View 1: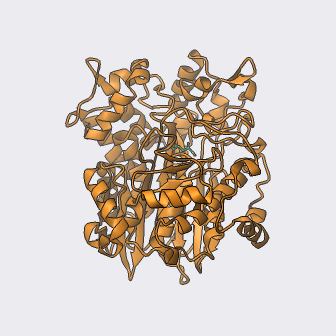
View 2: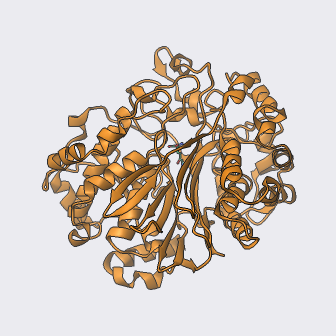
View 3: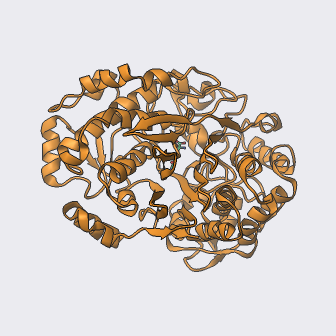
Length: 565
Ligand code: DON
């Protein structure tokens, strides 16, 4: 971490020298980047065995469920954006769904939203999509059998993996709630203490669950003994999920959302993901000469911040599960709408968020998700984000399955005025309802050049900061010309319409720049996301130049790794 801070301080004044400080991993063949080194190595091994990027991504996904339990999962959901070697672009939506019985009233006490019902325990759990999502990707686009790609995860669960420092710290941080759950306590704590750095953590129950999936496929999870065990755990603890909810679950293979940015094609997540917001921000900033105005100068940042403000307003007010609402995607990305926003953005003053609609937001707790990116030698590209939502999700394990359950239902709006854990105030389009998918900030993205070759594959964890982390990585790489490692590791800033606050990572803005932003009208500049974590998110990115792949891990997650095949 120290090294990262030193690099970023230097980088603000010495950009051209940056490549020397931060050389990305590079390879001609393939590349895997994930937030956990063991999982990255699993992916590279699959590529070396002749598997394609989809085989490797599925293997990494299952491995992360074992070696990165805070965030990798089979008890949650996610999105996968693919660009296949034959030129086809695909989006796999394996977002969780609300149980059929879910209604706003369940999550209220005396008319007020009770966030503890969403965040902790069994009521906030959505029907998990990860297993069907990964298996669908493999079946359609992979080349190896499920057994082969799952075996490394089964072995890691059965024989154990070595716990690294930040992993051990995560267990300790979540101890109060995790230890209240008998199974989580038995798994992640020894003699009352979080498993220590350097020790081997075995997860025999998870190994059995994974083994069953590898033998019997998704059926074991959605209609068989695993669904039964999860439903039993949920129902005996006051939850509302049923076997029918599991049986009704389906993965949606969708057309990815596409937009043009400086002549390149951005392939990203349609609703219930937030690629439309990534595209809207990019389209708004497109005409401004960011590089000329200067990296993180008040002038260039002003345009990005204003774009973030307007695009988050549109997102929070209008987007939701396409099975339930008509998402105004065409309108939001239309030339007229983008132009109207650009005309409203003043060079020398901010637009107040209150003028779009008022009500300040607060945040309540920490969050966890993980992004990983894989490209193979034939240039199949996979960009995947999976989430349990909160730190270890609902912080409960489903009986003796070894599965940590998500608390994804907090991504819904329960009403239109109460912020969720990311401080997002969201509209009617995202109100909770049975069988509905909650709106997500996840936006795994791939950018193709004019010839259709992948320039960049990028995605992020970090709740609402996912969107701005992706946009700023794209700007850093494509507009400011930074190598991918610098682009990922530069300090970031974030604005999400409400609250009317600019969140800054350390060194995002110099004191001068903060003063200049203040003069433009940015009244509240806050260090860290809601003052809690000084840095946020986790980006995993691969860029390609002249046929060479460059991979970058985000040093905000020091246990991650970018590794070439
Ligand atoms: O889907 C979403 O938008 C959230 N559940 C993502 C949560 C997240 O990224 C937490 N991560 N660090």
